Structures are given as C-alpha cells and as structure tokens.
Length: 96
Picture 1 (cartoon, helix red, strand yellow):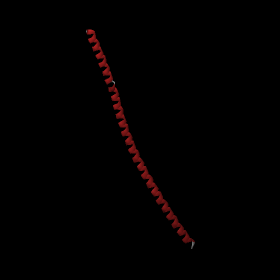
Picture 2 (cartoon, rainbow, N blue to C red; picture 1 turned 180 degrees about the vertical axis):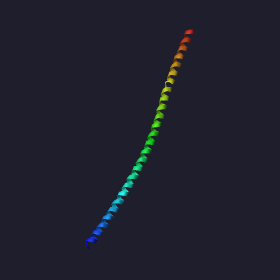
Picture 3 (cartoon, rainbow, N blue to C red; picture 1 turned 135 degrees about the vertical axis):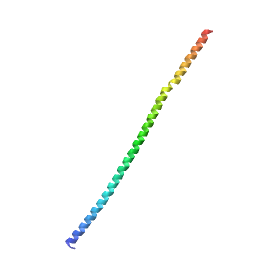
Picture 4 (cartoon, helix red, strand yellow; picture 1 turned 135 degrees about the horizontal axis):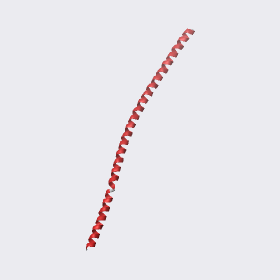
C-alpha cells in the first residue's frame, strides 16, 4: 500500500474517532444538563416542602401558646371557686 493511501485511511480513522468522541461528549453534556435540571427541580420542591413545614410548625407553636395562655384559667377558676366556697361555708358557720 502506498503512503498516500495509508495517510488517507489514517485521516479517515482519525475523523471517525473524533466523531465518536464528539458524540460521547454530547451525550455526557446532555446527561449533565438533565441532571442539573433535575437537581434544580428537586431543590425547588424541597424548599417548598420546607416552607410548608415551617408554616405548619409556626401554626402549631401559635396553637400551643394559645393553649398555654388559656390553660391557667381552669385551675385558677377552680381555686377561686374553692376559696369562695370555703369563705361561704365559714360565713355560714359563723352566722349560726
């Protein structure tokens, strides 16, 4: 085989190899872009979920504070009623 023919074949092999490399690189770039898109979407979904959980936690904390503020009233009212009942009984006992 002549040198010119061998160079032509080598050039063809080289071009084919470069085309294969370009194709492989393009596949890698597409996968990378798809993964970046998926990561962005998942991050946005997670952040939205975090916001919802934060809002729910705030709501639960507000409810807990409300319940704590009203909780003292029942024992307090029972104490006042007991004292009033005792005072009434004492008053009644002292009157007779």
